[in-house]
Every structure is written in structure tokens, then in C-alpha cells.
Length: 429
Image 1 (cartoon, rainbow, N blue to C red):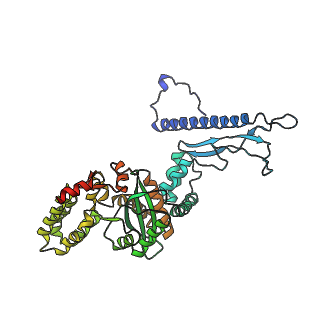
Image 2: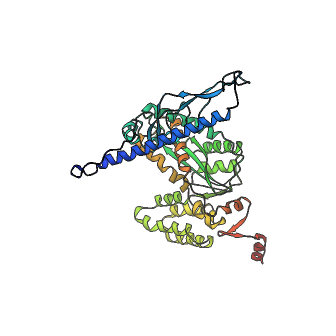
Image 3: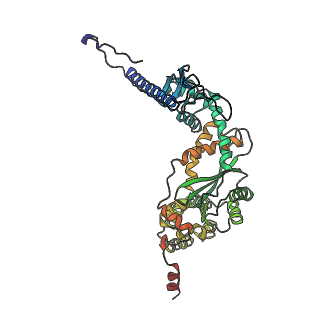
């Protein structure tokens, strides 16, 4: 409770203590939050009683009345720990269907609540992003003003919910969502209690409205064709349509599975992975100069200039480093497929960056914990991290063009061709 302290005489004045000033601010915030919560709970109870004021027993007494207050309890909120005393209601009405007494349950403060939903969401996310479960009490106890609900078992119990949420996500219906573009990649994560690494098969898609969304997340075996095929078949069984364009690295497993399950989908090789493959086939002294050549290809203003850059690269390095040049020549159609789509989308389609950037947090967390303890824990951890990151994903550039791509519109060097038949006729003439 705040009190008024008399102002000291001039001779007794002291310099303000920054720590006490900070504590006073915290107390003011907590006291304000406590009073607002108390008023909200009182208003909720008064509204409930007023709604049934006309219902009375045979003696004319009201069936719904106030009945004191519940025992005070401490609630962890974003403003810190505050003590709450919730009013109690005596509801004597009988449910005609069950024959049991009706009970009032507060929508603001359920009887089991000890933490607000925001705190409940933040704790496991802090764990995911590197804070050990044993560090919660010393790290957050002073900040929140209480250590209630911050023990390691509490955090562990919260994390147990992730596996169930991941299973629900993996079984959801995909028939109502249309993914026009799709990125696919395999991410390898160390597991403390297993000899082999966990291979996470990740698919992220672009909806028809331009928004990015996680399509599927599964554990596979070394990005094999069969592992990818199982994942794609499962998505197809749950109603997923074939994407117009799929973006991924050169792993043969995914492309073999895509050709089997969704043969109508076009392929776009990831330039980020391709540049790494090209440089690995070159001696170190030649790598700095050769690194500029692929960039000139995928940054070309149109497909014609890109093919010219491919020819120049072959002429410059083909004689000495044929293996490195072949990595571009053999996949040139798949590497330049993005030129047949809106120019605004090129920056999104040339690499698997949406997956790579998202999994930077997964790698950070697994580095802190030396990897998850099991495959199921690793899968659940990755799912929650992606779910958290997904809220910050932005839509692709020019999202209105995504629907045109699904509709089969023709784009030449990134520009929409309204009458492709007329262009074909003029080219033939």
C-alpha cells in the first residue's frame, strides 16, 4: 500500500537513491494493476448477479448473491507479482439437464490461474532461446517480484505441451489452404542421447494472399527420397495441392520425391547452396574471383543476360575447373526458373533463406543445450521456435500477384504478359 511520507527539512535532504526510485515505480505499477484487476473482477461479479436478479426461490430470496471473497492468491503478470482477492458468488440455481448446481467461473481470472497467459507463453520461449530451466528463479524472480511458478519442474511441464501441439499441427487438414510457392530444406540437429543427428524436414509455403506459413515439419533419415516422399504424400493425403514452384537445394531426395508426388510442380534450385557447391569444387586461390560469377548470373536483369553470364563463366573457368562449371551448366534451367515469375518475387524465390534464417534460432538453442535429449524433443523444440518466428514473417513483395501465378498467368522476365498467344504469334512471324 502506498503511503505519504512527509518532506524532510532542508538540512535533512538526501540525493535520490536510483534503486529506491526504481522500486517505487515498480510498486506504483503493481498497485495500479492490482486495483484495476480488483475493479474488473468486481464489475464482472456485479454483472453476473444483475443478470439473474429476477430468479428467486419459493420464499422470494435471490438465487444468485455475493458470498464474501476467495482466499487471496498471488498472480504473476507482465507487471510483476500482484496479490488478488477475488469476490465469491453463491449460485443456488440448478441445471435442468444435469441436476447439478450452477457455478460461476470468472473469465478474467480462472480458479486455477497462477500466471497470466503472457507469462505462460514467455517462459517456454525464454527456455527455447537459451535460458536454462535452472536459471529461471535467479534470472526472473527479482524482475517479477516473486519466484512462484518459476521452478525447473514448472518449465519442464510447460515444455511437455509442445509435443502434443506438434502432433496436432502435423495432423491438421490442408484442404482449405493453397500454397503457391514452397521452400523445402533439411536441417540437421545434434541429439545428446543418440548416436545419429536428427534430420528435420521443413516445408514453408506462400499462401495465395502472399503470407508465409509453415506447411510441415517432420523428422527424416538423411534427407532420403523416401523420407521426403512420405512427408509429401502425407500432405497430399490431408488435402494439400501441388505448388506452382518448389525451391530447394540440390539434394536428390527432395526432387525425386517431388517428381513422384507432385510431378506438375516446377523446380527452382537454391542459389545459396549452389554457390557453396561451386566454390567447394575450386581451389581456394580461385574462389574469391569465381564467387562473383554466380552472383552476376542470378542478379542479371533478365534471363537473356543471365544465360550470357553463364556462357562467360563457362569460358573463364571451363578449361581448368570443368567440375565446378558443370554444377551450373547441368542445372541451369532449374537455377533460372524464377525468371518466369513476377520480378517482385525473385528475391524470395532464388534461395531457401526463409528456412535458413528461421533455423538460426534452432541452432543457437541446440548449441546452448548441447542438443535435445531425444528426436521427439528436438522435433517439438523446432516446432515451437518456428511457430514463434512465424508471427514475425512478412508477406512476399507484391502479394496480389501470387493469386495470378496460381491462376496460370504468364510472366516473361518478371513482367506479366496479358495476351501470351499474341506474343507467341508475333515471335513466330
